[in-house]
Image (cartoon, rainbow, N blue to C red; front, side, top):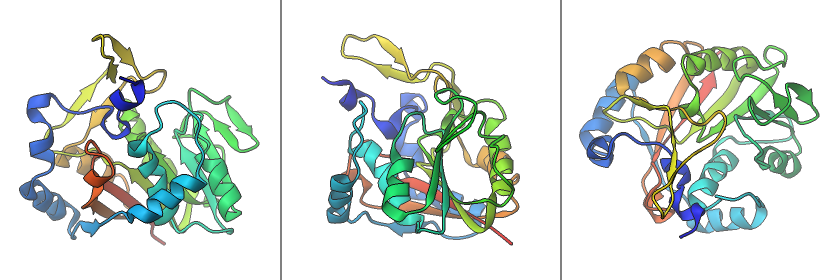
Length: 258
């Protein structure tokens, strides 16, 4: 069995098995989530033909890239409404080429950012350093994405990042988090990774060993309460299991207010 099939991009971290899918996916949980948000969760479906066309356009030669990972980039590609006037950042991107694809496809300015994989400072289209201290001007960014990344922000780094995102985004600017790992149980691990067919545990690597699963109270206190200048829409991909049975269906788009 290949590592690609073991290390599902959307399931790099999950609560203990007894607390997994039944709790996060029930209608009761969705209703509680909507009550917290004060608005409905938006049901959407992936156009599978369009997704196939995207895969023909986007080239990513790294290992571990399967449909469960590609759907994250497809959602940014389709839901951020990117264009030539945008300045885009792929946050905690490691060595991902998606920012370069965005630049070449839409003609906009694009950066990839990472704490562990990129040299500190701005080097062309690469930004190295902490996502809570990105060395760009206030209001200079219009679009941002986190692809399977927010859950790896350790300690208070998630809170600090959302403060920084509010500084960076221009009015109407958007931040997309895909997937949004949220369920009934709050949980963290410090050895996030995957187990191979021989039963050997492999950590994800620098910057990705920690992982967090939000419950509703922690999502409110750590994200919503600290993001008063951001509106939020949460989406549920109703047909996500047709892309990959392991994919988690929630993602969120935050928009800068004023």
